[in-house]
Amino acid sequence: MSEFVHVAVDAMGGDNAPEEIIKGTVNALNACPNLKVTLAGQEAVVKAELDKLSYPADRVTILNCTEVIEMAEPPVDAIRTKKDSSIVKGLRLVKDGECDAFVTAGSTGAALAGGQLLVGRIKGIERPPLAPLIPSAKGPVLLIDCGANMDPRASMLLQFAQMGSIYMRNMTGIEKPRVGLVNVGTEEEKGNALAKEAHQLLKDCPDINFVGNIEARDIPAGVVDVAVTDAFTGNAILKTYEGVASMILHELKGALMKTLISKLGALLIKPSLKGMIKTFDATEYGGAPMLGLKGLVVKTHGNSKAAEIQHALEQCITFKEKKINDLFRSEMKLDELAAARRAASKKTEN
Image (tube, rainbow, N blue to C red; front, side, top):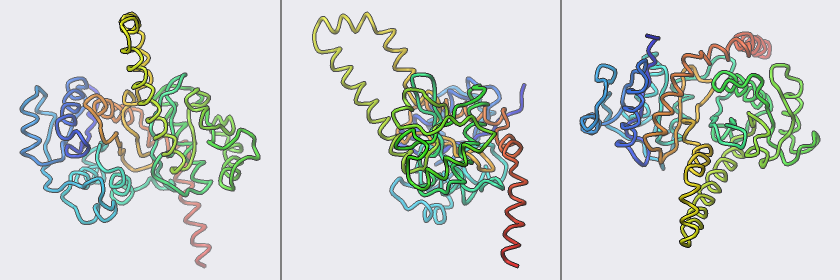
């Protein structure tokens, strides 16, 4: 038996909590014998849902929480005032080393704020980005950042590229992940001041396979494995992606159900269609990890169903087994970087 991976799960977060959250957690427990889970939420509610299911009780703990952080609440205020919420108590388990990771479908803002304030950054990391895997014609692409840093510095984008490369190489097995900088054109001189400065830093970095600027349309085409950008642009790309996918599936279903002949055709192509839809289903990849924290925080969609929660928990297991945070520290030389910054800070003070 390999070492247990202990994950805290926000049982109360998201549109489909607690039923789908707990169902997905139980599915992961039954599929992964090295997984332990602490379900953070209202004990009576959580227990009632667990009683409906068959699960390994010796690997499940319930952490009673009397408060829930709602989606519309100011994130920092909620983290500071709702100390008995499922998000705060779950994050504290990671901070205190009792859990390896935390998974939530609840408030993105609270998860991001709590990740930084409670779990904390790895020394040397400037800002942790939120980095979901999204589908493309050639496999998953890591979109980094998509929600955490709206106005990053160019040096942060460089770290995003480095972390993204390490993550993709070890989590997906791509030997030399192709890194692209999202821009308004592929030419080197294109873009705003941030894009131009970041381009030079990425170009000069020997640790990544930088292929240059990319446009947003290159992402679904699979031109890169890691798409680096600021959170404002990344979030717009992500939401557009999700909206277009939903629209296409809706229109496709309508077209296939329109006439008797189209319905017969739909029956013939149903197996191939299911495979295609699964390939372009982002929930297959789990949640969006917040990279660069001392422990792992994973944010899933607010409307997550059981399958996405299960995949997110499996994602946490792989992250721990691959020792991703240790690789960040060693390959990015974060201890040396942190020491250099301390020395520079002392020099400035003197």
